[in-house]
Image (cartoon, rainbow, N blue to C red; front, side, top):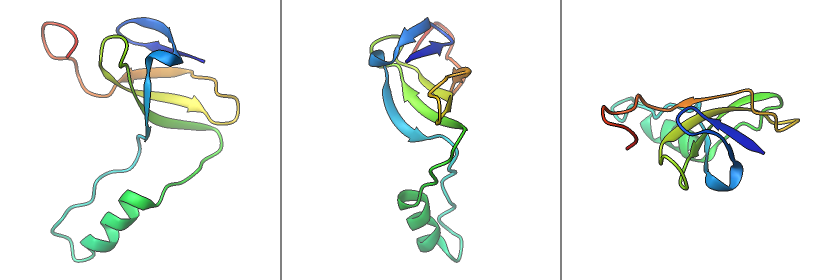
Length: 92
């Protein structure tokens, strides 16, 4: 597979490290059900079919975190974007 890094261009997947699902949002610690919400956030994951957003780290390139849209059925990667805006002056 090749990942289209927005900074470096199309690169082999061997340059990247997979982190996981990019869609979960960390729960607030002050909520009444904070323990259950944190348990679900850490341990429960969906296994969707089709397009899915994932975090990938470009370890052997620009060292930026990416949000990669990947089709879990075909492994086609139609899009990738920086997970956070790049700091002035280049890659972090």
